[in-house]
Amino acid sequence: MTDSLPTTDPDDVLPAHDADVTRVHVDGREVLLVGTAHISQESVDVVRQVIEDEQPDTVCVELDAERFQSLTQGQRWEDLDLIQVIKDRKMTFLLARLALMAFQKRMGNYTGVKPGAEMAAAAEEAEAQGAELELIDRNVQITLLRAWRTTPFWRRAFVALSLLAGLFDSGEVDEADLAELRQSPNITEILDELGEILPSVKGVVVDERDLYMAHKIRNADGERIVAVVGAAHVPGILRHLQQEDDPAAIDAVEYVPPRSYISRFLPWMIPVLIIGVFTFGYFNADPEYFQTATLAWVVANGAFSAVGALAALAHPLTIVAAAAAAPFTSLAPIVGAGMVAAFIQTIFAAPRVRDFESIGDDIVEWTGWWKNRLSRIMLVFFFSSLGSSIGTFVALWWLKDLL
Image (cartoon, rainbow, N blue to C red):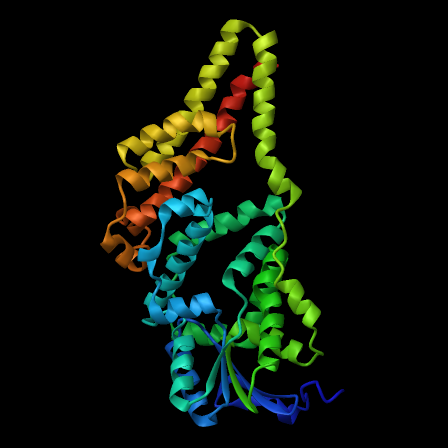
């Protein structure tokens, strides 16, 4: 073993303070990995105690700059430009972000601890002890984009449905559950299951970040370092710390791959197919049946999209807009029915100041998504888009007879 690798003698890797803390020597320096649960008061207490006792030169935390600002200064939803988000076609990303936030806050409510409180505590203790603070996690947008774009197209629906299911998850946790969950055998079992179900997601969300954070810890300043990370990352970080540092591998996990050819062309395949069917039917099918099929297309798309908007309790004009837009936007993937509906909803039922201020608390309960005007726009986008998609496939029953 070279001098650049961590010491792996059993005497050098041992618990310190608590079963959640592991001490390891890397490049002649001492690193303490503190494995936490993000909604555990016990984790908050352990983090504070370790930093106070060890007096580290540097405290590393599992955060990127964006999440650190959000954690310490709030989400600042009032700065959100919804119109620009819609124009940039980022509604899906924003919806996913809100869904994740809602799930974390709901779990935190069971223990009375704000998600990420142990990271905030680490930052506070670092400042109190005069230690340097190092943000070691990869940018969250890179992680989400890599996870989405490296997931096979046919499995993305499963990812989306799993995220949606989290909105209605009523399972409760307590400190005892979290303590059990942080134990290494339990974490390994959970990660193995995730790897079997969604290997690409597990690879990006867990394995790549283990590599990235190990690199950042290794290159942090100081002779004694405390690294506060989620317990699920501890085994992987330890493994990478015992290997040679590989800058090329770090560049690779920071690269955002372009959209796949399937992702680029599939949204156009159905419209092209449908336009081809209409064109063929116009010249070859019975004129009366052609009119019936055209009417079926318009009614199915419009009606289902309108029902989706209605399910989101959209403004009446939004419902009308969804019905009118869906038959045409289904043939032009650049602009979807959900985008049109969300745009109209933003104009005629714009979020109020208190909607921005209370969004985090409102969406903890699934009914709050409908009460808050900001989150309701997300629902309008989702349900009207879903309705238009359903309407497209329903209308195919009539269109097939044009051939």
